[in-house]
Amino acid sequence: MSATLEVGAQVTLNFALTLEDGAVVDSNFDGAPVSFVVGDGSLLPAFEACLAQAVIGDRQQFVIAPEDAFGQPNPNNVQRIPRESFDAAMELEPGLVCSFADAAGGELPGVIASVDEQEVTVDFNHPLAGHAILFDVLIHRVEAPEAS
Image (cartoon, rainbow, N blue to C red; front, side, top):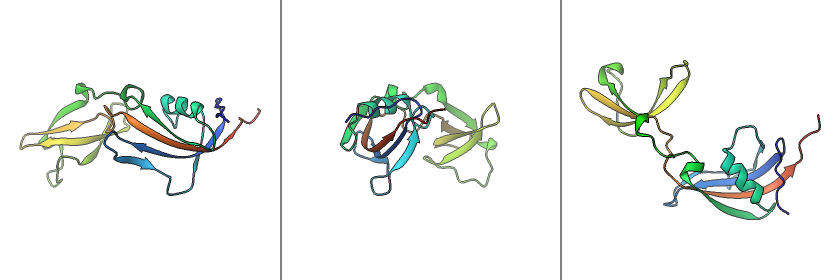
């Protein structure tokens, strides 16, 4: 039976997200299934669309293009920040994730791309930007939305 995913339905599933090279980004197949509510914003629309094609009880895999997953990297999201803007005692190295304040006062994660004496290059693109995602899913249950 195919999943009927209307907004508000609760879906219980196991999933894995894998990159093209086989690297597992996230998986809960070794643990208990998780539940989410369709349309609550916890999954990107492309992931929800894949679930609508899934057959309850059958483990299935879907490939999601970068444009439908986490987007393509935007060169404008790579910023050069003066080294003096960072705490002098902070050990900055490529790959380090730092938290920055955005214009609205919220937190924005950035990955240190490079460091020299004068500048720190920080990549604010999503770490999965530019990657196709293999979405491996096993839907256990779909519960219709509660009537209001």
